[in-house]
Structures are given as structure tokens and as C-alpha cells.
Image (cartoon, rainbow, N blue to C red; front, side, top):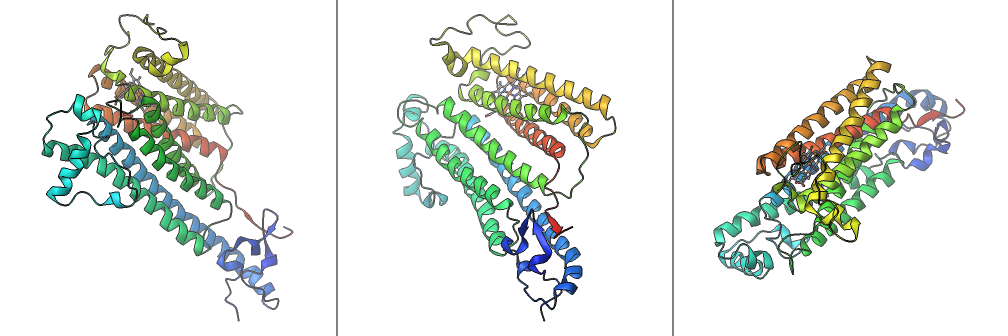
Length: 397
Ligand code: HEM
């Protein structure tokens, strides 16, 4: 006799498909004799199983997001301590083992001594000083590998034990693919600083940072979607598109921040609110063709990052005010207010970072703050769109 929690394949549908197609463990029963009994007993049980699976998968995704957050912060520390070029080879598997003997350390140091950064900036650096920058870069790469493991192994387990609802599979596979791509982009970025330049390309650094944030946001998006449904109508018809715009502006602002960081543009024009003594400094478009200024001109890049912050704050603040007027006690209004506060705090940290010419602590706080703003922008849009729906329904119901 099959256990009571098995579900007759015909009893449930998944958005029009038979549950049998779902390859969930509880879809295996074909016993006609048990159908009626299972039909009634299995519904709450399957729902319960689904909810439990969702809770476990959600917890796992939050844990992955936390490790990615740490990875982004360590990546920032690696950049701010100028450690990012200390490992001059890409060994995705073997690179997990750091140098273990004096000879191996010397070998790594010799490789570093061949690149322009050592020859033009760090000439005369001692082996002990080299070890310090090496450990930052190693820790960053080690954490990146750990994210791969912490994501891929549970994914395989959930998949093989039938715990993944079908709609999750392509989403999680896409995130895995983005993670692999990010490893390649990380090396593409490092490679830009090994032959001619003494640092990495700001284009590549901004791409690496932005893709890290896309992966982080995608994980939070899926995880929030698996929360128990608590759908509440948006305060107004404009709420959801505006929340989408806020998320887009946040990504643009993070990309611009990556350009500022990559160009060390925070070490110049260290005044606020004026820049070079003016609201709109002269010299914004000195390069030809003009588009290059937006990626390569230190002044323009910093200026655009400031304008991006003012734009983001204006949109977020107006959105919070309108949400408050339209649904004062709404859950989404609370999220909009928290988001507004976070953007304000992030702008204040950005200003301090600039005024103090990027001390490591402020630089890291600003980077972490950018990720916190992003997380809240994702949560905000997700709560307006609602959680993933109850996908089970009784056939013919
Ligand atoms: C309010 C929204 C803002 C967001 C989301 C944001 C985000 C970011 C991000 C992600 C970075 C890259 C950090 C890194 O890779 O190390 C960055 C860099 C930077 N931002 Fe912002 N920022 C904001 C506002 C501001 C403001 C208002 C200022 C100053 C007026 C500012 C000044 C800077 C500076 C100086 C850097 C370079 C720091 C470094 O070299 O490490 N930011 N920003």
C-alpha cells in the first residue's frame, strides 16, 4: 500500500500540467484504488512539503547571498589595499592551495616582480609586504570558490532529491551560469593589469562589480519570491514601475561607482557640494570623442556619480512620500521608507568617503552600503510584484 502522502498524478495540476511531470517525489503514485483517499489526505501534506521545501531553499539562498555580500566587501578591501594583482596566474582548481613553503612564496613573488605594478610602483617591496597583499587576493578568490561550492552542491542535492519546483530550475541554473561567467570576468579584469598598466581597467572593474551585484540581486529576488505569500495591492498603479526604475537606477549607480573606484576618482575633487569650486565644473568634456569622458575622464566620472546619487535619492524620496500618502499603513510603504533612509545614509557615507579621500574604512562602508541599498531595492520591487504564486491547484477546481 503506498503511503498516504503520495499524490495521484491526476489529482493536481501545475499551471495546467500534470503533477507527474514535475519529478517531485510525491508524484509517483499511480494506484487507482488509493486515489480518493490520497486525493483528500495528500493535499495538505503536499502543500506542507512544498512550503517546507520553499523554506529550506529560501534559507539556503539567503546564506549564499550572505557569502556573496562578504565576497563583495573582501573584493573592495582587495582593491583598496591594492592587492588585486598579486596573484598573476589563473588556476581555478589548484589555486585554492596557497604557497606552503619558502620556495613557493619566492616563486609567487618572482612572478609578481615581473609585472609593471611592481616595477613602477612597488619596487623594493619585501617578501613580507608581498605576503600581505597576496593574502587579500587569495582570500577573495577563496571566498569566490566557496560561493561556487555553497551554491552548486546544495543545488545538485535539491535537484536530485526532487525538491525543486520546475519554475526554479531555469532560474537557479541561470544564476549558476552567471557565477561561472563572473569567475572568467574576474580573471579578464586582473589580466588587464598584468602587462602594460599598473592597475586594472576601470571598464572591467565596473563590469565585475556590477555582475557581482546582478548575481546577488537575482538570489535575493528568488529567495524573497519563495516567502509565504502575503500579497498586498501596490499603493498606486505607478508604484511597481517606479520600484523597477529605482532598481535600475541603483544598478547604474553601482556601475558608476565602479568607474569612480577603478579610476581612483575619489582621490581628487575632494569637496562637496561644490566640485572644483563650481556646481558644474568646467572640463567635463575635454576628451574626444565626447563619450570617452563618461568612462575615462576622472572629473566627469565623479560628477556623473554625484548626479546619479541625487537622481536616485530624488526618485526614492518622492516614491516614499507618495506611498505614504496613498497607503500610510501599507507594508510596501514601510519598505519604501527604509529604502529612502538607506539611500540617504549611503549618500552621506559617499560624501564622507570623498571628503576624506577614500580611507579604507569609509571606502568599504560605502561599498557595503551600495549592496544594502541594492538588496532593499530588490525586496521592494519583489514585495510589489508578490511572492511566487501557489502553483498547486486541484484538477478542475
Ligand atoms: C546614494 C547612492 C550611492 C550609491 C548606491 C553609491 C555606490 C557606490 C559604489 C558601489 C561604489 C564602488 C565602490 C568600490 O568598488 O569600492 C562607489 C564608489 C564611490 N562613491 Fe558612491 N554611491 C552613492 C553615492 C555617492 C555620493 C553622494 C558620493 C559623493 C558625493 C559618492 C562617492 C563615491 C566615491 C568617492 C567612490 C570611490 C570610492 C573608492 O575609491 O573606493 N557616492 N559608490
